[in-house]
Structure formats: C-alpha cells, structure tokens
Length: 178
Length: 331
Image (cartoon, rainbow over all chains, first blue to last red; front, side):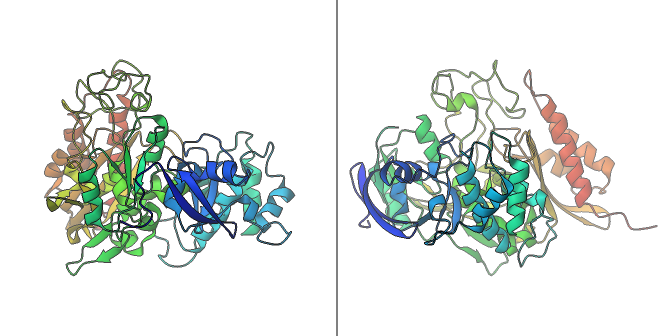
C-alpha cells in the first residue's frame, strides 16, 4: 500500500490551490468544495445543489472542469486546483472572460457566476483540444479545434444553471473571448 | 454521511486483496455517482478503495483490430478518442449524450457501467425500495413511474439502468473485463447487467470484490456503421426516456450485420435479439425495419403512465435504422 493509506477516518493531503501549496489533515468525507470554502476561506466557489447537478461549484483540477462538490479531497493529493479567485493569475487584471462577463452584464444575482466562469475556461480548452460535443457534426474532422457557435456553447455549458436566466448574455460574453 | 476508511492500493492485485480483507468496501474512481450516494445515505461503506490512480487509464489497439479501453479512462477522453469516433461512432455519440461536461471529465468507463439507477424511490431513504432495502416494497410501481421500465421488469422492481454508454457497448458486442481473487474473466456487456427478478438489489453479474479492469471493443464491429439516438425531457443534460444504439451493415440491399440495443426501457441495456434475428439476411427496407422493431416491442409491458416509451423507442429505432441503411442503388 502507498503511504497515502490510512486505517482511520482522516488523512493528510497536499494540494496546490491557485498556485499555493496547502497541506491539510482532512476527514475522508470532506469534499473539495467544503475544503475550499471552510478550510481555505476561498468562498468564490458556491454550493448550489451539492449533488453535481447545478454547476455552481465548478473548479479546474489539473486543468479540467469538475464539480468540486463530488470530489473527495483525500483523493486529490498532489493536484493543482484553480478556483475563480485564481483565474486572473498573480496580477490585478481579471481573466478576459471575467472582463467579458462584466462588459456584457452576464449575471443578475451572481451566485452561479464563479461556476460559469470556471466552466467556460474549461470548455474553451476542451474545444481547443478537439473534443466534440453532442451537437457537433459527427463527420467533423477528428483533429484540430472545434469551432464554437452559440449552439455549441449552450450544449457545452448545459450543466451550469442560472436561476436568474442570464443565459443569453452568458453566451454572448463567452463569444466575446473566442 | 458516516465516516469511512480510505485506501489507495498500488496495483489491481492489491485492490482486490484489500476488498477481500474488507468485504463490503466500495471501489472509488470518478465518484460522480458513489459520492452522491454517500451523501444521500444510500451507500454506507466502512472503507473506500481508491482505484483512480491505478494504471487502468490507457486505450490500446490490439493486433486483431480490437480496442482495449482501461476501466479508469474518463468518459470525455473516450468520447474524443479518434479511433472510437471513427470505428465505433455509436459509443462516442452515446457518451456525449450522457451527463454533462463536468461529469464526463470525472466519470470513468468502469464506473459508468456500475452506476446505480436514478429511480427517485431508490435515492430517497424515506421511501420503500426493494433495490435499496430488499423486502421494503416498491414505491414506484403504483407511484410516480413515468420514467420507469416497460421491458423485463418484475413485481419487485421497475427501475431502469441510466447509462447511455452501456447501451452503445451492448449493441457493439463489447466485452467487460473483470478481475478478482479468483482470476480474470470476461462477460459481454449485453449480459453484464441483470433483470431485476427476485433480486433487484443486484444490478449486475459482478461478484463481490471483482474489479472492472477494462472494456474490449471488438474488431467485428470496427468500422461498421453505427449511431446512437436519445430522447429526453430537455435538449441537454438529462437521462434517457428512451434511446437506441444501432450497428448496421448492408450488402447488396440485404442486412449483413446488425446490433440493436435500447436504453431507458429496462433494468439493463436491452439488446433487441428479436429485431436482429428478423433483420439478418432480410432486405434493408423501411418496411422490414418496422416489422422487426415491432417484434421486439411486442414484448413490452408498460405501466399505467409510461406506455409512451414504447412508441418513442419504436420511432427512435426506425429513424436510426433508416438513417444508417444506404440509399437503394438507382434502377
């Protein structure tokens, strides 16, 4: 067994969050979302449904967008996590997508926005890597980036709910950075 | 959620030995279903065995033209694999029709096959459910069952299997590779899931402690035209009301090879053997397709509120069969 194995109900994990290393002793029940919010005071990531259905908790783990409410922290030892607080990098400038959301007024209450932003960043990387979606023509070339029109964006962002219904402007904001 | 231990074995052998030492433990990979069931209290294991870092994440071409997909390959990566897109397109389409981008980035091939039903009575500890608690009754049979089974259900359980991926794998004659303390074995994906019968608490024929190590896509269906179509309540991110995967090769106007499987209709992906037998060697015409599909769906036993599924499945299957059949040669 690896050194990560422990017979009890707690283990030590080391994660990098927005570039900074953190070593914590976690209850095995701890999900990443609660670790971020409760242990690291990074309250940008939001708890909506807590069951992977609403997307408000979406963060990037090793560059992939995931529902942080469904990830047990103990499984993430050595991972690199990026939350909405880290999207802009070290500088004071927001990420271009954050700027586009502001310019387009792509929210009302804002509760879903951090998840929308992290999800959109992940989506842009997936399309650039050639990942097709349910609405992509299956006959599309197997290599190269997939062009993102509104239909593609709506399908690919379908697991980020916005109860205020700001979807048209969210799509426009994403189109601005493509 | 009750507390649990956590082990991260270094090999498949260590994983199955860990289970043997801790019967009732659960293997954890992507966790998209299991972690949710832990939160709901449906699953209460004393130990999780994390298989997420075992070297089961490769996709490998074998000399005979088959493709071996490791159990922890993520659904998103498998859907995007150029070999899958080109040679077994129904699988890529089924994966992309399932769940959401975030979930597909976490969910694994093995976990997808072992996901539990989303029957709301199964997920609610306050409701009776023979699958969750044998002997407690079925709340859905006389309750809310619009989404439930129309084929192969039993007095004890009318739940459906929620997977899109498994439907495509069943039609494509894929096999699931299992490993346990008794050694390795393979089962056709089409026979991997059970009908509920007297034991709805058992979803599959997997033995306690056995681990899915991979899925084999056979050479026999490589490059054969295939497609998946799914009907659901929303345009995206919803489970199938009904779905169909079709594998169809036509030579000189006659059906030369065929595989048809329905999703959303039963406790397992429903391989339509009656349809296939009727079609093999028959002319590839809309009339022949319709007759063959009806032979299968004649076995349906809809419940009070879900007869619509039979018509839906009928139309989905005919659409995909007609789409895959080449246009008749001009006279």
